[in-house]
Image (tube, rainbow, N blue to C red; front, side):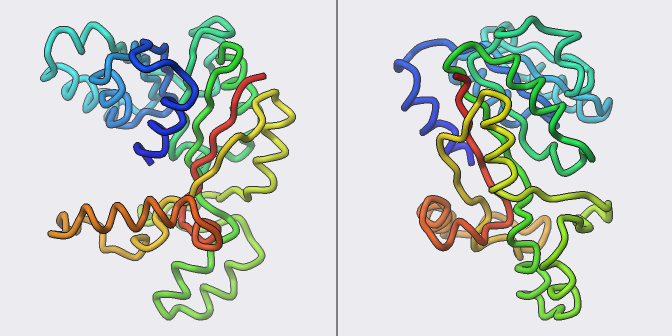
Length: 233
């Protein structure tokens, strides 16, 4: 996903331009820190106090120049209008968040308002059109049959959450003025890997396969996650 995001940024902005980035639901700050290291001015917004503490600890270990380029705010992604003025950012990330939001449209509309004209909105969501893949590949036939006609699922943390369909999000992005420009699949071949599995010896080959599949039909359509990139008109 990081490679996909970099592809979109490089294709849209001059090389070396320092961008204003907002990472909504940044978790422990993996992407936020990566982009700050790349020279961008990054704001991370996260409501989970444990995640905020982890992100701040990770940031404290960075060189001063990177620490100065990143700020962390504890808050809810649905309240971006409380913290920021419209049009304040060139890039807005919302990765792994929508599955926990029962009604995502207001959140998405708020994120679009944060974008400057031509700004990039990057979403990572659970693919509702492929919910049967994980139980099916595991031989859970009852679970697979039950997944075809729903957007609800139980994640690996044991939480009941929701997935999104590409067609629905495409319409939503058009409606909020940030129409879809590109989309990718994420975890096409690796969704069934065990949690906590170590890095394989052939990780570069694995990433090359995932990257190719993530942009190629029909493979990307059955990925566990979808990476959607919209652009503010």
